[in-house]
Length: 401
Image (cartoon, rainbow, N blue to C red; front, side, top):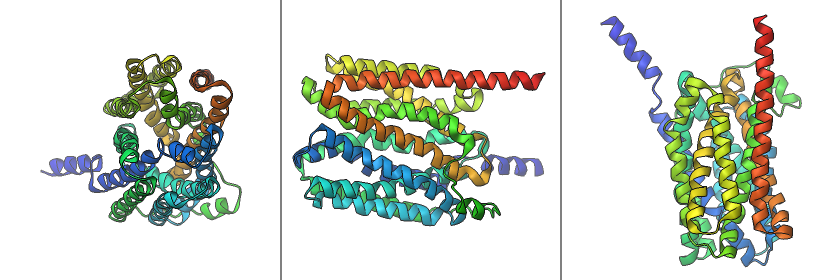
């Protein structure tokens, strides 16, 4: 009987689908839904306000740069002040800023409010990933982060398509208010989570006083996600405009097909990472992403658009949770928040640079050049990864001697 009770306690300890895990996934899905509904519709709103491709890129890109700047602050606050206050504050800022978009009568005002939205996003998304990693059992981290990622994928599956549909039947003001309401739902879900108490860390106060902006152990996977997330800036920002220019219909379905492919990979990619590590995932995944980018550069028809969505979904859906799990794999428990901040900072930097640089490229050379450049960014990530692997193998070889 004693052995049975012990086994049951061990199984409970290793469970992923707990009440708190469901709540963090629900909060994450709501905030991502509000975010994803604005991604393909904001370029249309900027155009309505009289902006060109360069201003579209600037308005979309500044959001990620403001998020980037606050993530190290969010990481320190998560370590010193606790998860709840940082998460709820970020969600509230995000919800209020998104709801205000429809009342912005100029691109300048919208630009400033996007900065505020980035602050809310930086706090809330850093906190959300950290809270999820707190809840997920360490031995099942890859699998758990994959399931957690499904919450964002569900939002990605329906958010862009829903946003593009709603702008055909509702004014922008009402669309943005709906996105704000989703932020309120996220706050309700987040308030129901039983947060783990942050362990006392004597060095936290010292780090807070110095220039502590990253976690060293998370730098390698974070650098890789930078080159990969550049592609996301090109897709989310300019693909609706590119398909309209080429006369290819079905952009709403692109995001749905892409997200469905993402969700399929979440069912097995995390477990593959737990068993075999990033070496079994990274190169195949990036090959698929690069192929998807080249297909978008070609894109003669809807069929090719959807094939590109499947390839990109399989590739990004496999590599993103693997890199996030890798970024906290060798991190001390009291540094998980800063590791997540480092990872998402590089992710944001990639998306932001992608949106801004691709805005210039699209304006000067046409939208097709955006996706050729994105494929080149993926190729660079492969070279960087192979350099990392070579360095790791050298260290292991020396340790064996």
